[in-house]
Amino acid sequence: MHRNRVFVKLAGLLGALTVLIGAFGAHMLKEYLQPEQMSSFQTGVAYQFYHVLAILAVGVLYKRYNTKSMGKAVTCFLLGILLFSGSLYASAILQVLGQGGLGMFALITPIGGVFLVLGWVFLFLGVPMQSHGSGSEGDS
Image 1: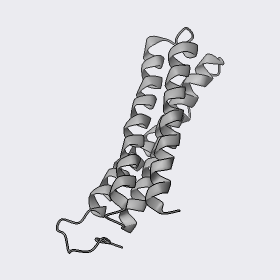
Image 2: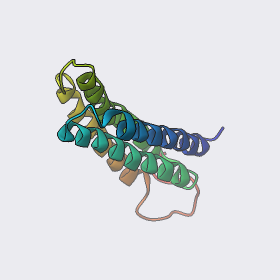
Image 3: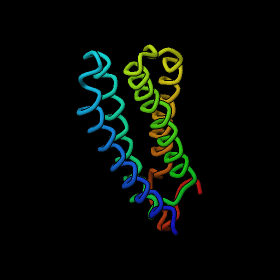
């Protein structure tokens, strides 16, 4: 299977998961979390969804700009979702279970944010400034 198809399928799977996580938070966690904690959970869902759309965009663009940077962008977006959004979800679940708040996740969340930023940088680098007439351009 071509990488662009893998990226699009991954975006579809993660998109569905994002909707399920958001619904879980809205319907199951809302009554157990303080508004500030619920806001953090919703931030995780929002950032996950934004970066699922970014992965989808890379999947569409990858067919034209088949570069190493585009693959690195997807990897960074995935790591960012896992660390950034995942740490916010874990913190909320631990709060519901009476195990405290962010705790160690306060250190993980910004690392995830760095990966999200790196994903955008790699996306920028993966699309050449000018076309050279081939389908495989850039840093491949």
